[in-house]
Amino acid sequence: MQLKTENNRIHYTDETGKLLAEVTFPDREDGTVEINHTFVDESLRGQGVAGKLLEAAVQKLQADGKKVRPTCSYAVKWFEKHPECRGLLADRHS
Image (cartoon, rainbow, N blue to C red; front, side, top):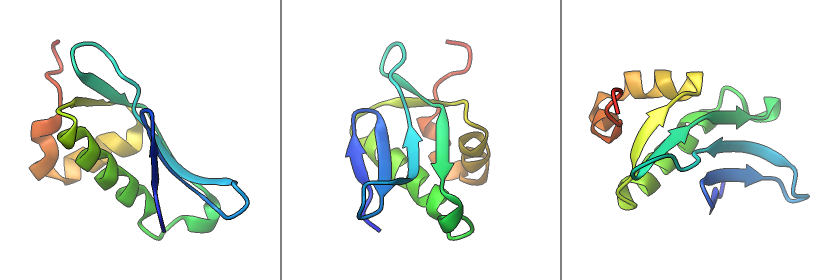
């Protein structure tokens, strides 16, 4: 599976261009992004695809020096399960 990175989005499509998985993270204030959407097509569910999307997003955002504010329910749970990545989280009071 080859994930593609575009502006504030990491996604995976099939050979016909159909969107099968994506995570979106639009820019917010002061170098912060909001992980606001995670989608995995039914054909790929249960295979760890959403986790791979979040891992790729975290790597990109760390490299870009961004902080994260997860609002998508999957992303919120993912960060709870990955305490090693919590340093990437933006201060909730800012």
